[in-house]
Length: 286
Image (tube, rainbow, N blue to C red; front, top):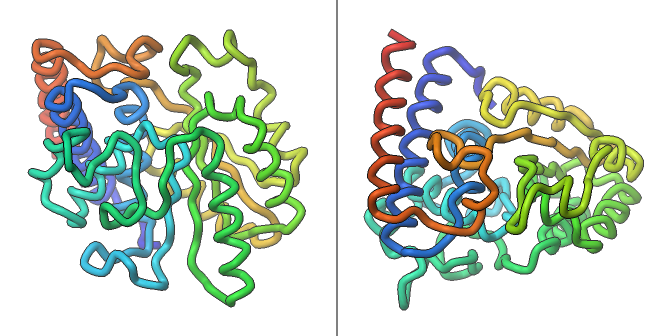
């Protein structure tokens, strides 16, 4: 992984802003979909597709690629946007989200779109899939990495903890999980619906190496992945504290935006805010 220079941080900040603008454009065109989670995870997906991952957009099935397994499939607009901006398919295709016959379904479907590793939708399944893939790769002598992106709300699902126990037992050092710890789910705040804390201690008790980071700080994101890669005798979990709806003031911290798209007037306001932010990013680094 290349050193994260100030110029690269600026580039990543700008790219994340572009990804957020694409998310808004996709959702308003689709008239359905999830807003808060995709916006909140834009920095992490940007860090992965534009700095961390070993991958090739022109050869998406390259055997030596790293794999991202998206467990909370409803936030797929952020992965679609990152893939498009990284060159996996035309950016113009993002406007087909959730439309009849599209490759950009409401939840990702393996085999439909390049760069999508698994079909996801039922919450809690991704970690089991990623753990199985990491175990099989170890048997085959593979050297690539498996990153499983999860939502905090989906930790209510029992099979997450079955996978956590299994991965801990087999010391899957090439498995790195990332939890979007935004504290919301579709019907409220996580600590009201089903309390998760003490979350770090829970993962540690299952034999995982655990870090907590600011999910909007690129240095934090990159350093956490580098540290996780240095722990070869156990799986790693990165608890990324994020702001749901990040970058759009009227969406931030509001769980009601978990599962709804912006209306045209709301999308216009959101894009104005993001474009203003893009200008600030540019001026701050001059």
